[in-house]
Figure 1 (cartoon, rainbow, N blue to C red):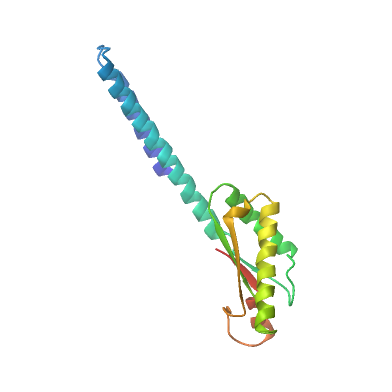
Figure 2 (figure 1 turned 30 degrees about the horizontal axis):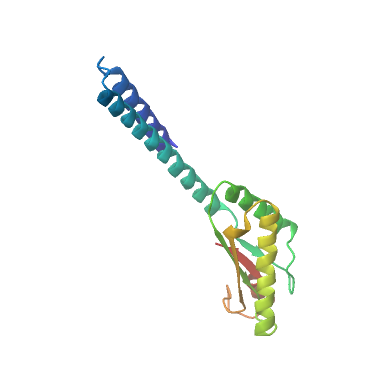
Length: 168
C-alpha cells in the first residue's frame, strides 16, 4: 500500500510541478507536451493501482483454504467446504484469474469409478462457484481419480486426505 501511495504522490507532485512551471506561452506544442506528461503521470498512477490490487488479491488467495475434503463415496459439499469456498469466491469476484479444480479419490474402487468420482467432486465445486457469481469460462474442472494421492498409504486417515478437490 505504501508503494502505491508513494507512486501516486509522486505522480501528483510531478503533474503539479509541470503545471506550475509552465510558461505563459500558449503554443499548441507546449500545451500538447503538458497534456502528454499529465496523461503519462495518470497512466503510471493507474498502473500502480492495478499492480497493487493484483498483489493484494494474490496474497488473499494464498492465505485461503484451497483443498476441500469429501466423505467416502460422496461428491456433496459440507457446510465447512461451502464456507471456505465463499471466501474464495469473494477473492475471485475481484479478479479475472482462472482456476483449475482438480478432483481426487482414494484408492478404493475401480480406476474408472474413481475417475468419475473425482470429476463429480470437481464439478460440485465448479457448480458452487458458478452459482455464486464466478464466470464458468474461468473454471477448469479435471479429475485425477486415485492417480495422485496426497499420501500413498492405506488406512482411513490417509484415505480421508486423498478424497479432495484442490483449487489452483
